Length: 349
Image 1 (cartoon, rainbow, N blue to C red):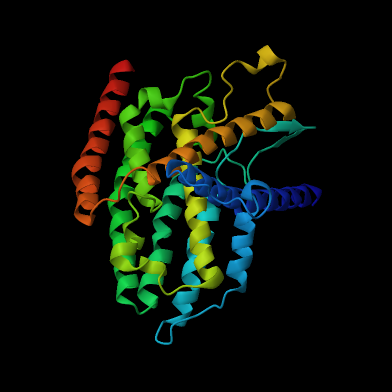
Image 2 (image 1 turned 30 degrees about the horizontal axis):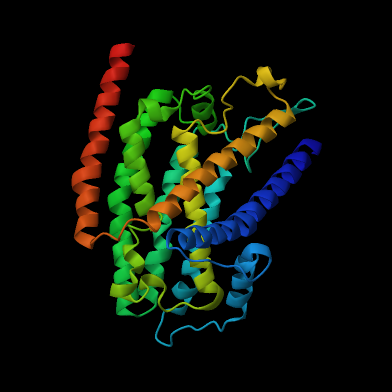
């Protein structure tokens, strides 16, 4: 009974910390970071009024969204119209249940993991792929239930886009799994210690995964589901108030999730560039796990910066170019990468 009580308390504490970091701090910081970087790229000032250096502007935006009137179209399907943003946001945060953030540390006789659940389960990758597939339902329901032709077109575009790029993304991950010989994210990161990163073994797989991640998160230049000049905002045209804010929040949560997974799969995750013993840290210590967590967050922020940089530097694709790239370029490249990786591993064994 004491053991189960300890596990439940540990789970609740971790869930509260992770959700607080992602929901409040990471998303707010992502909005602020995007505004500042885009302002710098376009030679503008950016937010500088609310708080020092405008750092409280994202929180002011949240308050504004909470106070705005929540409007539901009269002819809309009200149930699906309300549940759509909940699905998008729920899926975006559910992924963190199987993502590890550092090596476990010892507390007495117990191993404490830097994640919501124990991360060494071998279904972590499958769980992430399954949830990213389900995430499209939120956008599709939003477009269909709004009873608006522009919203419907945005939802249909998102469905086609997700299906097209999900195949390439999955195949690019299979190459990493073949190299690591495991499905556990924890073990995949541990095998990338001391600059033994998967990007050196899977450069083509990394490129395919990176482009697919842009498409999966609906970030420019793949933001066709919400193209303003064509669809007046797309699937979220008929949303206002905090419902619109939930879609907005889900987009940034997905951007952080994609950046985090890229770092874990290709850039060594939380591994230090030198053996921890060189700086007096023993494996299994709390301070080593804390430093690893900080390294992982730093790498993730660099990837987030890259996502923002690309958005404000590359123009949007046409829809036919989007489909061509997914089916006739990325999918064949992912298959070639998988075949070559399999042959090389078979020969080396």
